[in-house]
Image (cartoon, rainbow, N blue to C red; front, side, top):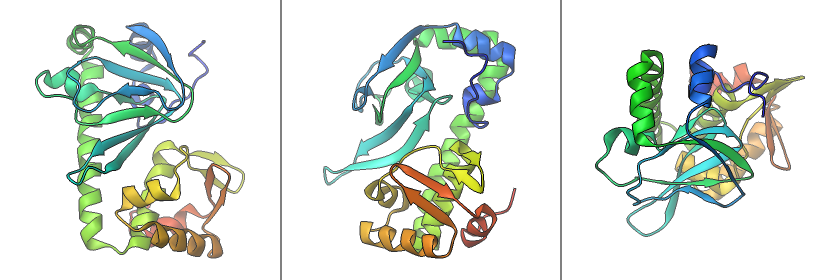
Length: 232
């Protein structure tokens, strides 16, 4: 697969690296394909490899105290998964990563990653920033649960997904990952019926359109204002 024409999300690891550093990362490890429903990484496992996602879409889940599974995040081509275990090297994996469709990735063993980080400070800095961004994102989710009603939490999530993973189309921005209403409910800490109502209200307001497996933001500035987020 020629990587030169691929555009990864700007905030992903492959999206932020310089072309030279990106090509070095893409030349490391072993390329591996995954089918829909296949587990890339499993919660509680003690393996230490990291995956650099090249294409596709995966969901990050973890078990909560009552035994249910909670959706924590989504990851797409350009992102990394498993970097915490590779860098930390002591605790078992904290979440399961599952492919939501056909995916490809580069599998890097921890030694390969460590050598890369020592040899390429640019990659080390970029990965550190990404880990910090993910921690801030998790903290914002906790604060959102306390500080905003469900409709605003939904708007905040949609804006972040659109700006991080979306791609522009005529008259809007298509959110770059497909999430069901139960999954949106899990990420916003709301009931599924509340999410259903919130999406309907956003559609009636002309802020978004939903179709089979797609969500298109029709008025990102207005949705950003509703979400109480700063305009970029």
